[in-house]
Image 1 (cartoon, helix red, strand yellow):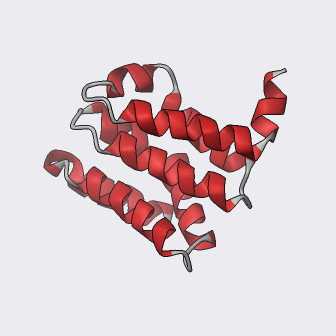
Image 2 (cartoon, one colour):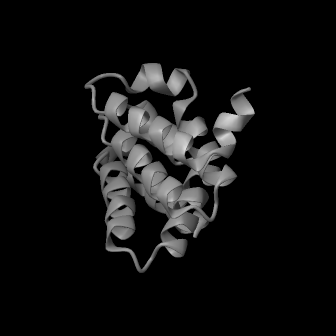
Length: 128
């Protein structure tokens, strides 16, 4: 059953790798957002809070999604649960430079949306 897949961090990492690859396709964000991919990434990270591989791949996936120049990006990825989950991953892996880089890339991509940068900064401040 599907729950066994969620329970296996190796399967989750493979799924996150697939999401990262899909998120690199230009213009795909609205389709992925509508399918609940953003929430799915966060759910994977919440299901495996102590697995650094899942946390890292989750940050990479969120960063790849944040890279899209789409008006839905800020609204979708600046949800409190999403930012809090990303911050927790960073805090757990703060000694890992790759983890810090993945988080920084995600935040940088979100801040690239000049129109929504003030709201993004407020949401980040509220989350952590």
